[in-house]
Length: 363
Image (cartoon, rainbow, N blue to C red; front, side, top):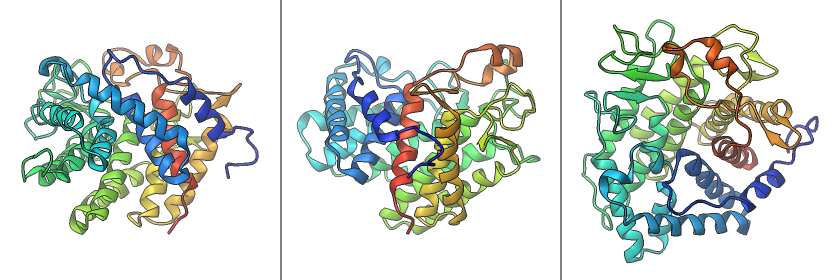
């Protein structure tokens, strides 16, 4: 159970939020929606409580209503694909013409999405030369799931090789070769206001993006393990171990990594989404033996620290209000003056994922 020093009740808090979680059917799925749905799927797998299944069922219906959107308008960014795994699981268990149509639409959106010269999916259609470290989480787990249902919704045979290459390419372009740190964003032309003109990377490490990337590595390693593809699992696991190692020298405050991990500033606080996703990746990686069991203990401590430090008056706070890349064109003052978000979809979803791993026994 969580640290007795905190009075936070994770399942109670999560269920209260889900009781009021209603999506606008005319709006597309965001990465926050995807995190919540993945959290529901994981928590239902652990607890078998109906509330999580009900949210998933309603969300599949929302996906079916989106199938009528025309292709260019269907997915301006990769956020929708974060939630695509739920539609896949529903289609795999009980395929219907409507589900297959929606899944085919998602497949077409993803396969036609702009790419960088290195083969990675672009961050969005408006900026086809840019990528974010977090994009791996948005797109690649769903991309792999699609390779497992080729009889229903065909994808190219090269898809598995493509996606693991994307995971490795993201590492090579986002990681600083000297410090080993993973930078948030990359522009292959070096033209963005935040980009280094010589290497295209953004100037700072942004904790949420590191968390998303680590979670993608952990999720893919587990998917490869379940489908008996040990070589692909090992490649994902190696990157996961390296991401976690890169954070080994990052300072902590009250047991939490800072929102800008390697920036020494008293205003820099422990950000919730990044810490929760890193906790999730550490615990999941250790459970699947992709990283050492020490990471399980560290992940549990991170999760407990978020409950202890970032909850106030029954609300989850210290959630980064947006992206960190504006620091390249703006200033640290702009970043630190922006009020942190409270109870955002990204924060709740990350909490659900971390809590689902917290409940699972270590093998």
